[in-house]
Length: 586
Image (cartoon, rainbow, N blue to C red; front, side, top):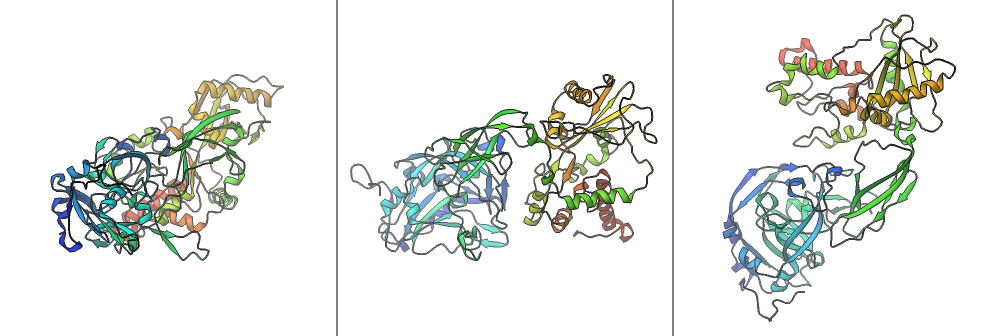
């Protein structure tokens, strides 16, 4: 425990003879709750969390019942419970006490209603300044035989997830409360705490999830039992992984080892063959000693991990050898069953009549001009087209079953490259294949369009690349792509006089802000029931696209039919059942 003062005297605090003689005066500083209700601000994607110290603008924010508006000049902290000397202090008295600065990762657990099943990466690295909690407890002299927990009360109150409470209250085991890193903080990153960050004073518990760091702190109470408030009994409890029966629950306290890659960024195309260098962050209540990196989920390589300073996140770096074969889609990444279903349905559903259509203006122009009215006025707030997972954030969050369904499917890229030649030099067959001896997925498929009954005399050849190769091609110039394709064609037709193409064209789906890819991929092991969840509406929010089509996922006409289904459902609610089924709540 801390000595009270260097000269042996007591600090300037307001002592009381007993628990009952200290009134609930801490609430005199509360002037309002504004704004009221739940609020969350998501952090940027991991590749944007590239500063060692996370600025306020990039730090996640979670407010459960509303933000407490506190008059700092009237703020009071009461320390009581099973202590020998209960006392209260104001903000000036607190700032005159011995202070400490701790740099620590700060992580949000995620939704307490639907606990996360995967990384949410609501994290930052923050510098806190305040008075060590154990110093305040040393003044109060807790009964360490009976006092097993320290309760912390916040000034916020209201309703969260249908549960109403007069305060936000959490607890800490006395051992954690007495550890040197736990602070009663009044500064973040060198600045006084704002209202949004729990100011004027909050609790900070490094190494534990942010829910334990009570904001708008007003009382610390040493008690024998755990707090009975809803944020300890109802919310923020999870299944204990050590329970083989999956019944026992434990409080959301300590942060288990976790990590994220910052560079390369998600979906970044890494050109190979060669070596690629990257880096990331690792963190946990305990110092991280080992991080391993894998390209395929089977072979792992150990990264270099920096030593930890205080409780901050740790830098790790790696250098891995990349073969371009890892950038093309592999068979094991796609469900054979459901891909066959959608392909066969497409082949049998339509006639042999040519249904191919095109528009020289491109899809972006069609959407912005011909569908322009849909993007104007109030409609602009209601319509979202071809949304890539993560491109749209929902407040409040989507239910867990919907989030899980969306996360189960992938957006991939399928790029068709059209080349027109002065004459054809290829055989009159539907498909031409190329198997590169080194690089998987390197221009493996060509399709002539000058076949009888198609576009005779056009001398057009289509080259196809997918997934990582498609990302790579769409990021480079047409001249580079043309050069690569011509090298392949001249290998395929060594005995032919292969001319240079007169023209080349391909769409860049991955760079369109309304698509970020071409089509969805149905991974192996994902059930039809999960796909149905992907398709289902959430209240008045409908989901439609090729990804939601049970018959034609992965095909453009799947998007058409699903959009038609959603439109008819909306029309039926507005104009009557003759338009379709009104199957969502108004």
